[in-house]
Length: 239
Image (cartoon, rainbow, N blue to C red; front, side):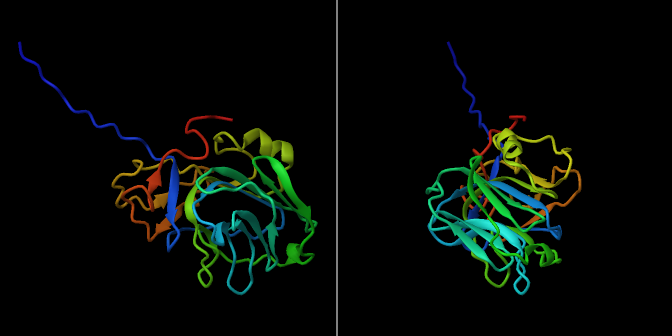
């Protein structure tokens, strides 16, 4: 009798993007110049440092965005930075964040669908949006990067203020990409997880507006600074 064997290598598709906390960021050519706005993302911090996940902060004019500071949510509202105490972030654990900016200058924030902030931190918000294309993932801005250490998934930008039931209904699943007022949408379901993804430096915008992101300084090989799995949302889970 004779036998033969064959080694089969299984490759897992990427489901999120891991940032090294040093200089990785994604540049998005989109202008968040509107007073009604919602920013969403699944985030997994791996450091207690002050760091930003989603931001259009301009070094001189400031803007909108959020990150974590010592595992607490931090919100950028045109040069007013709000730290929300008691928000449930921990090292290596995924959490969903939604920050809603209203035309009346009110800002609301949600973590895993639960409201954690609701106030008017800066009455100049509605007339003071920066009006320039400085939208980045994984850093605050070019002058003060505050680089993200950890992973990011399911980034969504809406050109209106979502209400809490809408956020709760769709934060734990993937969108179609054709939803009204969905301006930018990154699923990050790209590449081969933890493998050699050299050259795969474009994050695809699934909102149909082709506001693709450009990866900067990523190693694109191994378990960090690369496309990874799992993400915050199970790939293929539809809303």
